[in-house]
Image (cartoon, rainbow, N blue to C red; front, side, top):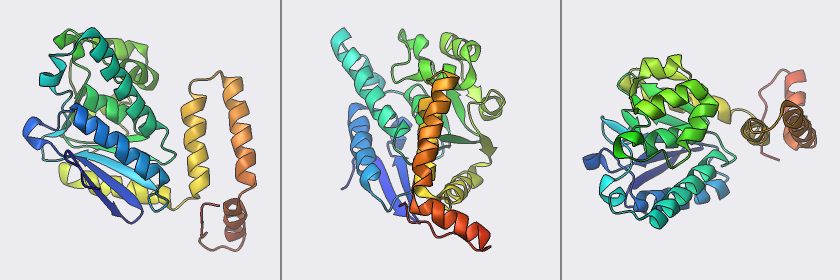
Amino acid sequence: MPYENLLYEKRDQIGFITFNRPSVLNALNRKTMEELNALLAAIREDREVRAVILTGAGEKSFVAGADIGELAVQTPLSGQERSSFGQSVLHRLETLGKPSIAAINGFALGGGCEIALACSIRLASTTARLGQPEVKLGIIPGYGGSQRLARLCGKGMAHELCLTGAMVSADEALRIGLVNHVYEPVELLPAAEALAKKIIANAPLAVKFTIEAIERGAEMTLDAGQFLETALFGLCIATEDMREGTRAFLEKRPAQFHGK
């Protein structure tokens, strides 16, 4: 289906999502989040899509945050609903069962940084600037930024970024663990696509269960997380992909996985 604020393309088992409001630096409005929610639901059921890359239209911005015009007229109740809905959309992204790669090609602020945080992996161009500047508007992060940032980069760094509202460069984001790699702008999308293809070469169910083990296990005690890992390991042992993978290794040939 066509989308008003998103571009979507499928190629080589990869779904490419582009936030497409370049005139406002791809700022998030309600329509964009509703479209993203619907698209992620469709991708989850699409067996042809094995990985997802998210980026922003234009050369300046991934997603520059919330649409301030919408934000300015929120009431306490509508604001709470806005936050809850946004969190549910990013939870869908985080639990998609397929790896997601944020290709951060410019500003990733507020909700844009929160979208990146909900992705499995974050790559940034040298021009990227990331941050949670909500306190400068008299609010706090509403789409999970205060929670995911603390889990990814530690409480001290989350406090610093969320309390100052400061932007960090791509190199600083790399240093603090907010992004995985930094590339020149022309190299960013090719690098994201190459990374997605490396992941796609592996067994689909093993990839899915690995994501689940990491995402769910991070919220558990070590013992509980290891118990989850054991259960998922057992599920993998029961798959045709495991038998194909081990057979291919022993026969010294590339494995042909089918997600079964």
